[in-house]
Image (tube, rainbow, N blue to C red; front, side, top):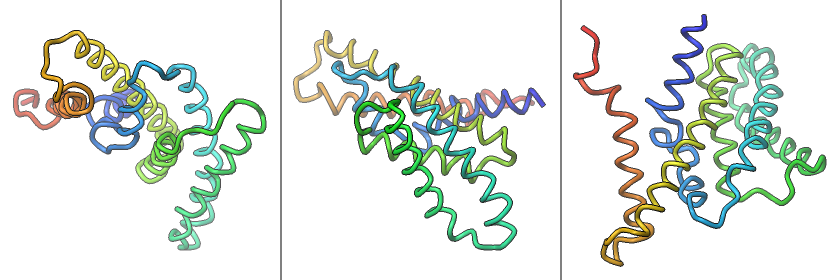
Length: 187
C-alpha cells in the first residue's frame, strides 16, 4: 500500500507534474515567480482549502451522484463547494485578501483532478498534496531561473516573459522525459 501512495506522490508531483503536464496552475506559477510576491505564506492555506474542499465533495459524489447516475451535476456541485469553502476560509481569517483568479483556477483544477483521477479517498488526498507540491516546486525553480536570467547577458527582447516561457517548456521536458524515454524503461 505504501508503494502505491509513494508512486502517486512521485507521479503527480514530478513525472506527470500537475503544473507542467496538466497545466493546472501554470499561469499562477509564472506570476508567482516574480520578485514581489508572498508565495510561500499562501501554500499552507492553499493546501488546507484544497484538501477540505475535496473531503466535502468526495463523499456526496461517491455515494449520491455516481449511484444515482447524475454525474453531470458534479462540476457544478464541485465549483459551488469550492467557492463556499473559499468564502468560509475568508470569514475565519485564513484568507486575508481575495485570492487571485489564477490561484482560484489552480485550486478548482486540483480538486477536479483529484476527484476524477483518485480511485480511492486517500489517493485523491495524495493527488491534491502532490499538486500543491508540484506547484511549489515549479514556482521555486522558475523563481531561481528568473534570478539567474536577471544577471545574464541576454538580449533585452529575450528577458522577462519569453525566456521564462522557454524555461517552463524545458522544465516540462525535464520532468516528463523519464516517463517516455526508452533509456529509463526497465527491461
